[in-house]
Image 1 (tube, helix red, strand yellow):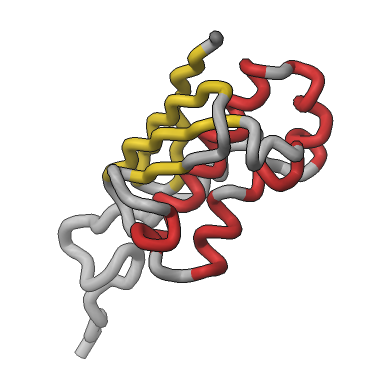
Image 2: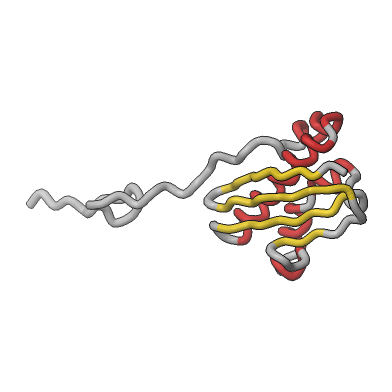
Length: 128
């Protein structure tokens, strides 16, 4: 039996996925996806790679996710799951690539700079 360990990330969140052949059980930080994310659209988004490849009831998944918020964590789980599925079954790669699940979303919040009120907004300048 092949066990796959892969990580994926989005924003500041990092997810580590352990994937093995099984009966379709999913645990995210020791909880069910519905219990962890609490929002149906985030659960659906996070588990989208399983639905797209038809592996929902074929693999057992254990996820350890940390950092960021719930949306970033759902995206990180999605990215890690897609990468793990490709390692488990390389023939699924075109499906996941076409759906954009293998690409790491590079968008992050801009850092706060010193001497400014916001990320880019500076103090108002008064000449007179």
